Length: 258
Image (tube, rainbow, N blue to C red; front, side, top):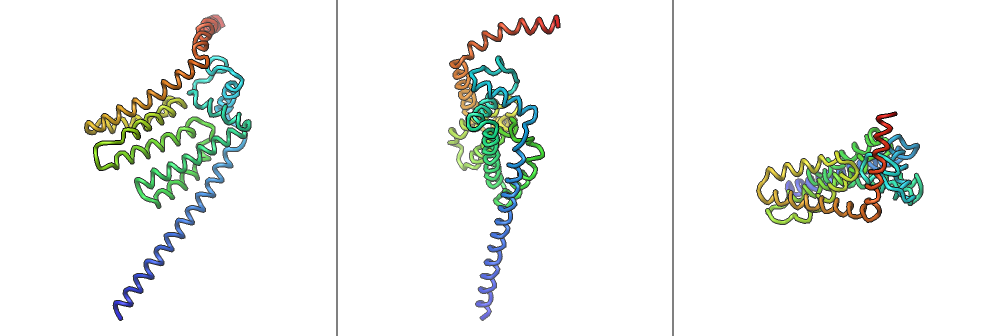
């Protein structure tokens, strides 16, 4: 009889614990959905100064103009391509669609990274906090920092999975992918590559196999940048350089003589 009571008690405790855990996860899911809706709603509205510049240069791309020559700004070319893609999809609202997709991707990768490192509960809590505070620092979402988040978080996810391998071999293609993701962040803005600098420093302090991973990541990043450079040259980059040489003396004269 005592063993029967003990078994029944254990069954009830497991059942209650599992249901409580399920309710907690459902509650966090509802909170995350609510915060996501609020974050998406905060992205709609009049663009701020930086976002307006990106839209302006992106619109020039659709008209066949060359960034940095026909329309000047100092960010990387990927931000203008993303704005051009949004404008092509549906005008300025299309840009908010692109930004919203990047936000959803950021949330997904943030959840995966935190879950890999700390478990599902910590991932749900951190994702809810991320979405809750997103409207305070994102300023509409159409910024280089917001677009860089999926690249940064997916690179961290690949890094964690490489480090979780029990053997010292492998991870080459994941390292190459990390490098390509770093190139994407660099093409948004050069100073957004802090995650990759940290990964590289960590690997360089490890054994020889980690140095090989660093080398493969560099190969991936440099290869991606070379592809972009070649594409830029094919669509008129050489002409852009020539036109810059023509424009520079005029700018110099304006600066010197007013």
